[in-house]
Image (cartoon, rainbow, N blue to C red; front, side, top):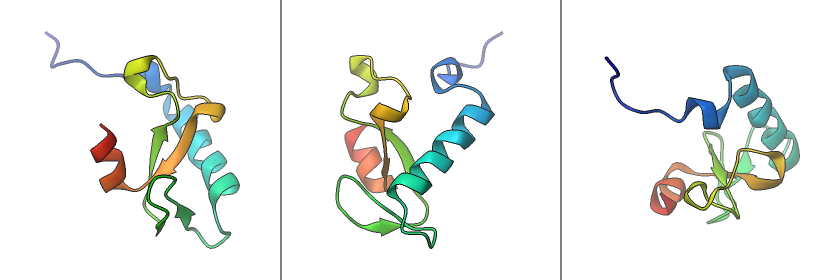
Length: 79
């Protein structure tokens, strides 16, 4: 019996997710562990990976050309 649906196939494996976080930290980071939220501009240490500019419901994938760091409030606001 299934407990619900997940998007693990869309997000990739744990290793894929680790590599994305390293990529974002290197590209968008300041060298001290902070990255800038691409929506509001705040420097955050605890960020989420957001699919932007092509959102998930529009078919956006978790690829380097379509991911940016976002703070939790901005990511929740964008859905």
